[in-house]
Image 1 (tube, rainbow, N blue to C red):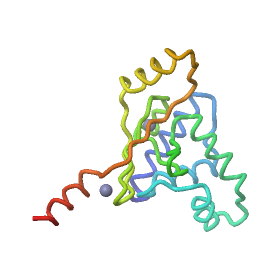
Image 2 (image 1 turned 90 degrees about the vertical axis):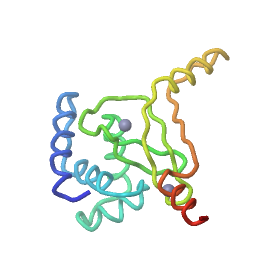
Image 3 (image 1 turned 180 degrees about the horizontal axis):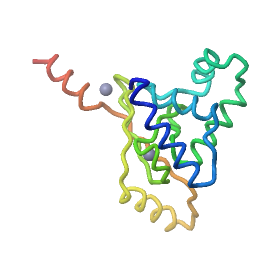
Length: 156
Ligand SMILES: [Zn+2]
Ligand SMILES: [Zn+2]
């Protein structure tokens, strides 16, 4: 995503935070811009490296605090399998929603899905055992449609 396309999303994110009583400070905005501007999910240390280019005194704590804030406000998601972060496709709406990730083993692309039915099934199944679920992330590994198509074409 170009920097130009990013600014309106950052502005919407700032407004959404303000509605929830939070403030998208410069450092939080910078971290969000890095996450949204990346093609692949970024880990905390990759983010720190990039952030240091703009802000030499950034520390791991700076990044972790910003990531916590952005997650709390539903602007980014953590892909547990990759220990990395991606921007919410709804970033700017700052709603908190059920989320599933499709992770391509070939190209590393991560696609966010929102299927309330899956979330409800997981919750129901967990509660049936007496467990009280607080948070569930469903991550599916496989081959994305672009890579599957490329593999088919390679074979013919
Ligand atoms: Zn999302
Ligand atoms: Zn792929």
